[in-house]
Image (cartoon, rainbow, N blue to C red; front, side, top):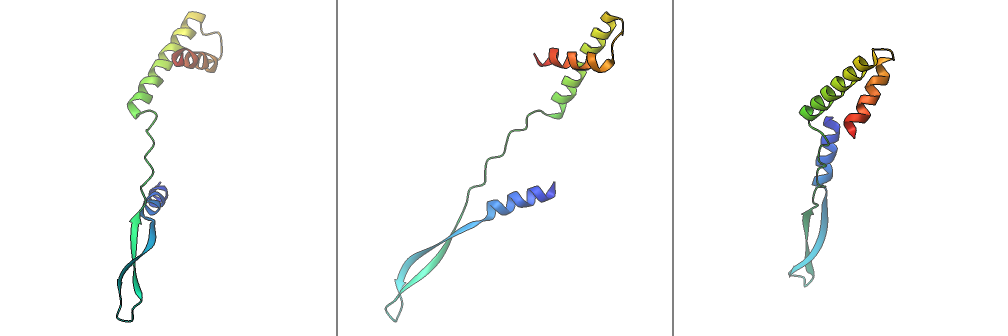
Length: 91
């Protein structure tokens, strides 16, 4: 995970060098000065769900699966109830 952060920081630090003409030197040639400009970092992506939202969703699915299984008399495989409950909560 730190490798990703380091890479992102390095990408944000990349600079572009430009040469700009400035004063003339004693020999009559124009001296150039290198300037650096920072590139803007890419905007961060919004996190899809927080931990609390994930826990809440898990509890909803768990409760729905149990109620389905109880109504059916626990005849099927628990995975089937879980998958049906996920579809119900998602809708």
